[in-house]
Length: 225
Image 1 (cartoon, rainbow, N blue to C red):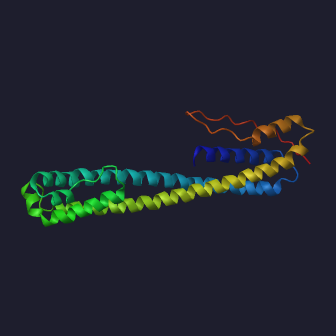
Image 2 (cartoon, helix red, strand yellow; image 1 turned 90 degrees about the horizontal axis):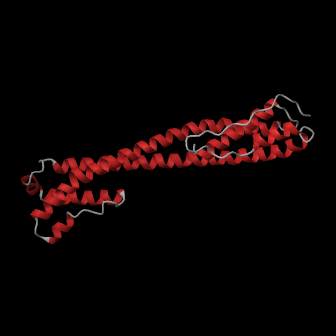
């Protein structure tokens, strides 16, 4: 969960605790909704955290494999080709794409480079590359291709998880809004309890800079008819 979602979950828990401790007539239906929202947000939050970690791991692996493909395979082949071949057409075939190109661009260029290098394998081996350099390069291309696919799936799952949490936040906010409309009139004769309710149901800014938000105190049990 992001900071806003965590802040919303904390708000919903405070409201639920307050109205469970200080029962107010007419709030039972929306309290059940809020309880369900809290339960689902807690569960979805765990899923979201797992998705975040998986996506970060997939991103790190993808970056490492991309760097390996570029530095260990594409650059050596391109430099050797530039020094050995005098035909401009062949030099172009071994040219490097922009390093900031997207993954599909890198993979496409690497595949084309491997195919062309295979046709001149003896030249590259003579210049110092291992006999199986094309096989190794294609293995690196396959690894990066797989990693890109894994990241796409994990990113999609992460997005879906966040959208589900956002939907739950909206449900919770709507429930608190209705509860506020019910509770306020019934607490008008009890200013201390009303003030406590105003504090509890108020949205709080997400914590930042390592500081935690101070939770408002819940007042003693008072049943309001």
